[in-house]
Image (cartoon, rainbow, N blue to C red; front, side, top):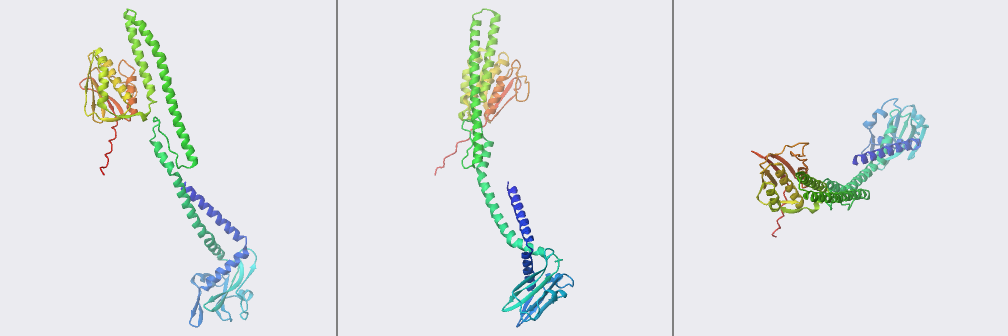
Length: 440
């Protein structure tokens, strides 16, 4: 943006320069007067006072014009009483200069030929101390293009310098103002990079922003609100579906319990698996609507002890064993219900797919990490990276665990547990240590 502003400012200066040159070019009368003033001023630079006498030496820069025969430029420098101090004359002097016995005026100018190239004759009086000196020049056709020097000096003095100062101050003020106005936008952009749409309080602050940017920020906040509304609607929708399907399944199971037949027992098992699959699908759908603002500090060992205690009867009823090894009770910021669901899924998967008599060990490791190990027959993982499908199942339970880990900013991995079995590792970010208050 700053480059474009500087570029347009430069183009504006160029356009103004062209306009000035065009205006001067349309007025040869004024340009001739300026040319006479510039040439006589330059010639006056050779005047010197030598005691009571005046002396003259042609300036070096003018030698190519006023010290070369036939150059098209002639000049004469004399005192008011007719004493000639310098003369570079030809027939043009007699044709265009005032006679030496004429008392010279302070300024006179005559155009020898109208228009361009410039052809003028004239003179003016300059003061050296208390003495008057009259400088006369005649230019025929301006072969050395002295007029461009006049145009350059006029543009430099009356336009380039004042306009450059103006442009510098205006550009500086504009760039500083834009930077100050966009500072809240930069802060909002940095915040947007870390904004969590799953938090109910996730919003961009539009305080101090320009009106147009504040409107954009408001639109972004409204978009987040709509996303949260859609997530809430999805959660309500899945809950309604689960309720509508769970009730018929419960009725079917009750009917099957009253039938004394092997096929009925197998059908009851299928209904139980279908009910569990339904619950997993509902849990998976609800994960995306979780509000991270509800996450709270908790101790891993405290949570794991509760889960193992509640699952122990179910584990023993299925012919397996379960144990819990607490360590340092590491603190994490988490959703207690979701972490319990994750551990419950891991334990249930180990019992269901580990084989008869499988032993499950739940514990923690530094990191902090939750580990669920078994000595069963292990998993044969299938599908794409990050998706787990154990033998005899579709892997939804493990996918739920993976989603819960990602929701907490952690990760989930499955590895072989030597010499036999599987080790599930749920890694979580540690809770920030509380700041120590200053004793002062």
